[in-house]
Image 1 (cartoon, rainbow, N blue to C red):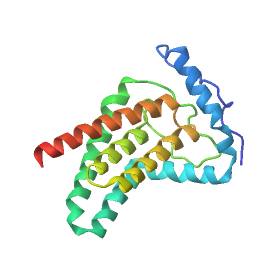
Image 2 (cartoon, rainbow, N blue to C red):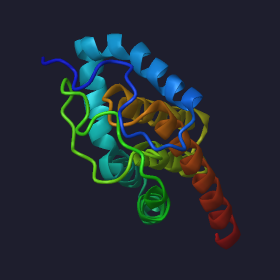
Image 3 (cartoon, rainbow, N blue to C red):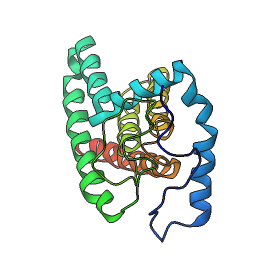
Length: 194
C-alpha cells in the first residue's frame, strides 16, 4: 500500500477563515488517532466497504428491500424509505452543502482506500447524514435488536468517512446530527399522515 496523500493530523491549507482553531485541532487529533486503523488490513477492508455501501444510501435501500422480501407487507415501508432518503439527500447535498465551502482532508481520500471522488463540499458529511436519517426512520418501524443494528451500521459508515480521510471528524458529527434531526422530523410526519 502506498503512503497517505497528506501528513497525518495535518489541517489542510485553504480551510475557510470562519473555522475556529479548536475545531481544526479536534479534527486533526481524531485524524491522528485513526492512523493505526489505516494500517490494519481488516479495518482498511471494513472502512472501504462501509464507505462504498454508504454511497447514494445504497445500504439503506438494500435493507429496505431485504425487509420487504422477508415480509411483503413492508414494501410500502421500503418505498417510503427510498423516497424519504431521496428528499434527505437533496436537502443535504443541494440545500445545505452549498452554503459551506469546506475543503476535504484529501481530494480523493487516503490512497490506502479505494474511494469514489466526491463532488460536493466536505461539510456536512452526506454519508453520515443519510446513515443516521435511515437509522432513525428504520427505528420507528423495528424493535430494539434491529434498531441497535441500524445504528451500528450508521456509526461504521460515518466513521469510515473520517478513517478514509474523505471527511473531517466535525463534518461527520454535523452530518450525523443533521440526519438524526431530519429522521425525527420524517417520523413525526409519517405518524401524522399515517
